[in-house]
Length: 524
Image (tube, rainbow, N blue to C red; front, top):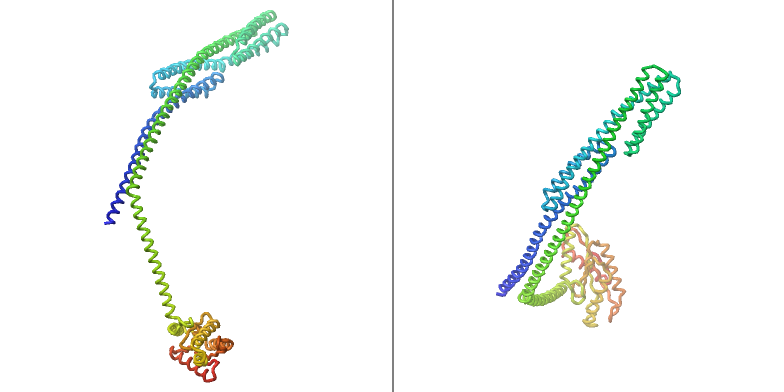
């Protein structure tokens, strides 16, 4: 019945704690679900805004790259920069299309479409600039250089021809024409490198000087010679110079067009940059705003979760406290009382076992001990003799026995009384224990007879031990009686012996010692 009540109590405790655990798990699950919902919302908002911001930043970066390669091409006319520009403008248009597809804000959408238009115009203007640059490059690399070469050839031919005519005015006019042409080359080079109109004015003035010098050269030649071949060279040089001038005008016109187109390109570039910066700013502001909203949402969820968990813990602790007070505490008191009773019973049992063991030890000790002398008794000696015989028979070990008897002990009892006789026996036991080895077994054989069993000892060793004992007795002054001697009989184990035959030999040896006058050792 008691066991059944305990089982019911344990079941109640288990059910109560299980209910508290379920309450806490439910609260945690609710909070976890709530946090997952918030996390998904925050992730969606953050991912969308982050992707839009990334696209906007990418568009801004591509605009910078487009401007960079456009500017490099306008300065250095490298084909590699033009290729990079074309690649970047394609990526820029693609990025703008992606940004439009992800933008829901109408204002932002309108701004991105404005960038698209400006980028399209920017691309068209840059294409026009590219055409003008290519035209200018073509004029410079082919026509212009070729024209310079033609003029140089004509001047060289004229110089050779006029070398025949030794006239200073002719040489002076030719030098003026040649110098004017060289200055034209110098100023056209400076104009192309620095794009400064003053060099164009200087180029044009030197063209006029060169034309005038050629006319003067022709007039001087006509006054001194009728060589038509020289006249033809002068006319051709003048014509080539005019063509050279006209080509330069075309190059200048291309440069002016490039500058004009560049200004328009800069305007589109400025518009694109301004709108893209505004878009990036708007997206960044929206990103920050949404960040604040998500932080508020997470904070609110954290507060809710903490509140739910605190409530669940409070209810669980309250339920645990009720269970502890109504069920667990009484059960613990009962278990403590039973434990104390069991402890007392255990201590009593241990005390009883200790007493029983002590009594058993006393009984065992008394069973093998002589009560008067404290030596081994006859029963113990018989057991040891039997063990030594078995070892000798099994392993061939030798052992010996010394049987000794107190001389004329009966007269001690008759003269001094049995009390003194008992004291002599005790002192004799002390002598035996003090002068034998630890391996020797000493015991009272009966009356005033003692037996020493000597394991692993032959006749010679046993005889010497008996002599030592005899001298010890002879030298001892016993209390109340003075001197007390002993007679000793020694026997050793021989193959085929029995315990009885060996002890008979020891007894006969002891008898021979007494016959010889006592206080001596005999071996049989």
